[in-house]
Length: 341
Ligand code: NDP
Image (cartoon, rainbow, N blue to C red; front, side):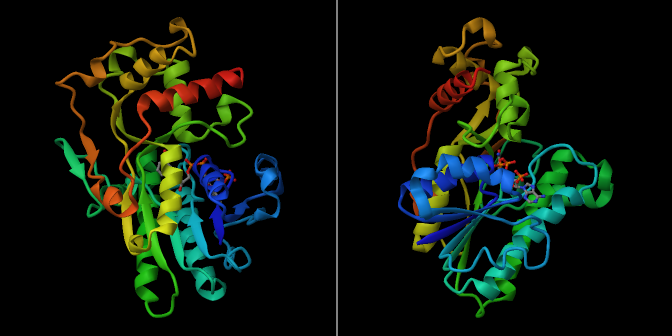
């Protein structure tokens, strides 16, 4: 079977491409320019004609994916802006929503072989900042970020512009499916991961070019950007990029997954946990790492404001064991070290 992966050069997508190829699928990836195709072609050269890269210059353009969807059996749509530097909320919202709806529209017209579309949404489309600790599930939707962007526009928190874009894009996808019942030969699966960490295999010549979630990981562990007294209080939930890539493969393989969104999360973390894991890994000398208060991220009085019920992904996708913080951290640090960072 042939799978289309949009934004194939991205941090998460490139792991999705790798796992699909390893499992024997053919993959067609989309990137924005010829220059961005080069690294992918090199990385996956051993797969010959089973791996191709096509250029979709502007995912917001009408019919942008018309050619890309032809002849594929399933689609993993990951392309969407994830950065934290734009004033205009539409710099997030337009590509997120138009890109998503565009993929679905092109599939309706030209994707006659397509059986399933998987969209990489985010926990950003699920969570709302709670007043007291709360466990969210797939039933929850983020209305908070959309409201803030509606009210404050450019003055909204940048994270909420991003969160609004992910929520609006996912909502638009479910609405498209609803509006086109009876006309479409595929079903939709949505994955909602929190922070994604793990080894970087996309093209990143310098640490400054690393993707947003791994930039925070790198900067916290190796640049000491966070106040050490805060390491045990700052955190969120996370998933290893390789587990998330596996979930993307399972999401196209599991028949019963159709029509569902799935939270894909290993669990909660405090940055102190990753700092402790970095010391334990022994890849960099202790002196190169922040210290904080070892073990304090796991203290019994530590509060996690946000957590997720992941039982649905376990039950339907079979996601029931996850890469640990220790393994993730060791692999990331070995990767950084091998790059001379
Ligand atoms: P990356 O920045 O590494 O990848 C983003 C991909 O989307 C790249 O291929 C990028 O292309 C493409 N893209 C971004 N903006 C546009 C645009 N305006 N037009 C066309 N293509 C665009 O990020 P991730 O791999 O982390 O993110 C992939 C997906 O996962 C996103 O949908 C993101 O929202 C989601 N996600 C990520 C999480 C994380 O912690 N990393 C957590 C939860 C969800 P180019 O390289 O050309 O810019």
